[in-house]
Length: 90
Image 1 (cartoon, rainbow, N blue to C red):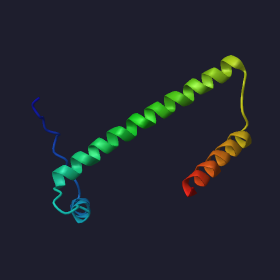
Image 2 (tube, rainbow, N blue to C red):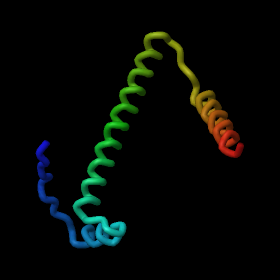
Image 3 (cartoon, rainbow, N blue to C red):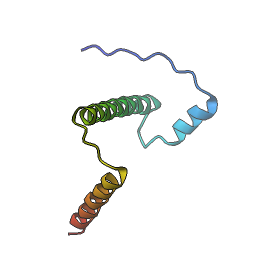
Image 4 (tube, rainbow, N blue to C red):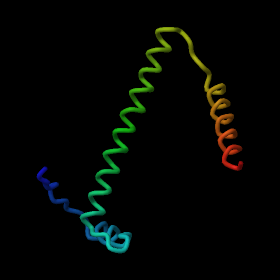
């Protein structure tokens, strides 16, 4: 498969310098930009899925009339977190 290029990106000199200052040993600005682009794509895909799940949940609640209070959800999440922390310590 042939590779293709991304359009040039014009940035302020300060932004370029900041990017260069965080490069790891042996890392190039191009590889940093590619990694950042991949991470951004993954983040947006995850956000799209999260929103889709939320909308589906809303639609299911409308359909069934079954709703949960914020307090009960928050309590359940705290319980799950406490259990996970307990398991981590074992």
